[in-house]
Image (cartoon, rainbow, N blue to C red; front, side, top):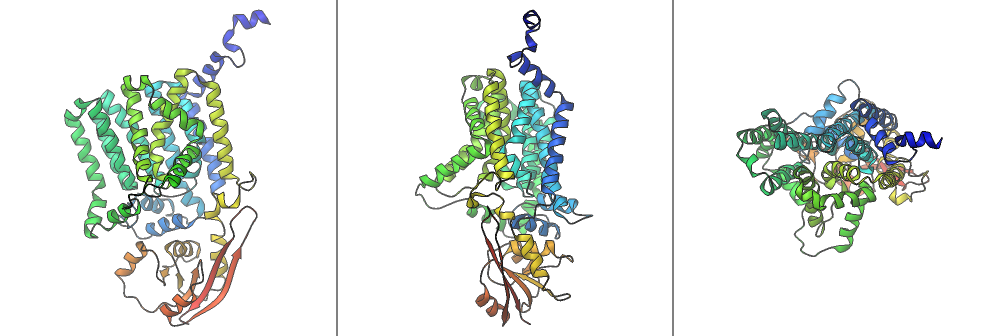
Length: 485
């Protein structure tokens, strides 16, 4: 036995060569495709019957009114949801959008890692990306972040090929991908910012290429529908997003800032986050043009939101565009330094966090930290209200999220009106072009709105206070009214 082990050292269990052999096998494109497919099937099963939360239903409501853009975000999520629900309106159909975006994004990430670091890094990058808690949550919800991450990842890969290999096709694909990312979410403006920073630091010659300017033109043309819509609406969407993510307060808020950074580390996985930072600031990264390219797309978005977070609350998903480059950078760092045990520890911690996202009650997560709270009780409340509905009775709501949930779950998918003062939304733009009569019908609210509803309708009768509670979830309360009758 000892002689056999000496003759075949690569076969020793736990040896570096054995680990490399497994990664070499996993790095085969067909194997990676199978891993991504398995991941997608499991996600489809999990998400098929998970109720929608309010924002998902809101974007679905957009898809019922095709437009060049919308108040809150660019139109890509609405366009994709329109395609996904052409034949069926269901949770499973809605969830196909983030599922396909995540699967295709994972393929772009492995292609980028393979180009820069080789097939072992491609396997590592896919595993890191798919198990990362941020991905596990992003694949569940149909929000603008899903197409943003896909087209950002595609632009990251195409941009690397354009910068380091050249070719008009890669330049044009980069421009088109940036345009599509901008059609998904305004955060994508950080991509050309990071690219320009890298080019100025390391590859100014690329800016002299005619193909680079053609790429910029292609991206601008793709994004032009949003520019046209905003021009026609007095730049209302740009102004809203600027105010939404910016504070005029110059007082530094250290507590929320540290919470934001800790949250970023958690949704990436703490060990992966530390490895990504180590890789980004490593000496060899400054010398290696392609590693520096990745570092620019990791550090600049992260630094941007960290700086803004000093003065204003930042949402964790806003900084998610930093994760694709961080994933590839980390994979290359692990492979270069043979950090197999560190990788396993990173995956174990990421898996533990992922299980907490998927099965928060079983994992003993406190109710206030349960990430599924936003899904809880919405469908049940709407269905309970609809049991009180008279044939053809109009439906009303107190907020754009409850209005959208009513529209989604009602069998006839009616147009729902927001009958009481609420946060400005796309519903207000739709209502602006219509003659508004006194509201009447069934009204769903997340709080006691009797006085405001009576003022809007002339009369309001409380039909029921619907309460939902379950172990491990924050209790939810809804109020049902009939008004104007």
